[in-house]
Image (cartoon, rainbow, N blue to C red; front, side):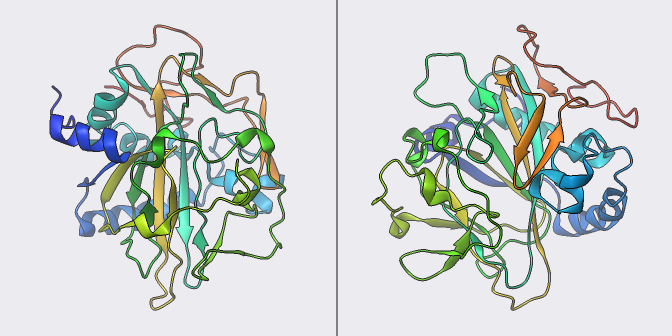
Amino acid sequence: MSQFSLTPTELADFQRNGYAGPFTLYEPEEMADRWRQERLKLLDRSNAVYQDTEAISQGTNISNYDRHLDNAFLAEHIARPEIVHRVASILGNDVICWRSEFFPKYAGDEGTDWHQADTFANAGGEPQIVWDEDREYGGTITVWTAFTEASTETACLQFIPGTHRQMFYDETKGMHYDPDANRSKTKNGVARGFFGYDYRQLQIDPDWSPDESKAVSMEMRAGQFIVFWSTLMHASHGHAGKTQEMRLGFASRYVPASVHVYPGLSEIHEYGGRISLENFGCVLVSGEDKFGRNRLLSHTTTGVPIGKS
């Protein structure tokens, strides 16, 4: 067993609930100091792998994808043993990181609607990850790190435990992007949305709705992370605006090295923008790549080694 692997009890709980944690990676003061330094560096996109001006100028979500491929701190973060050992205890030893992205919530922002992700075709219509094993569903292991404090007042995550083994959405249906559309409303009247999409368009049963009575709120201190299946029903509270401090989460996503990433795709089209995959590559963070299905990067665009040491 590796130093930070999930214990048998933690693994059994994860298999039942679909998530594990929170775990502490940085102390709050350390996280605040590191983010204070890195947020200014990230404003410089000259070395980012995605340079599409349309996506960037429109401020679409895909403009913040994969900054671990040019930022040294994020490159180190996605391969931290505290994260990788736990992920490998779920997925097996041969693991790649295929994506990272930021999730900010500002004062007054609505909550993120309930959703699941299997192939991540939900926004663009084309599968972005494909498992070739005989599995009922695929998905990715998401490691969501709180770069700032995340509470119920500042838009922390919510999970519905045990929902990771059944898909309630059909990603092949596709969704219509309209950032100016009316916000969706849950049964209790809480404003929720999904970055310009109405996730309810993917429901297999149009009359179904998530059982929010079973939802748990995942409050985290800055520097803590949670590990969960992307197929787990998850959402977030809204930012109540009682503080003007932004809530910021950083998600890194992992799959076995056998999974096909962006099969047959040269671009990603979603959230009202598009980016070229010409400079994209996955990062091997554990074990070996015995399959050769995905382009792997060993260094960031600035020459910093990335991945397993």
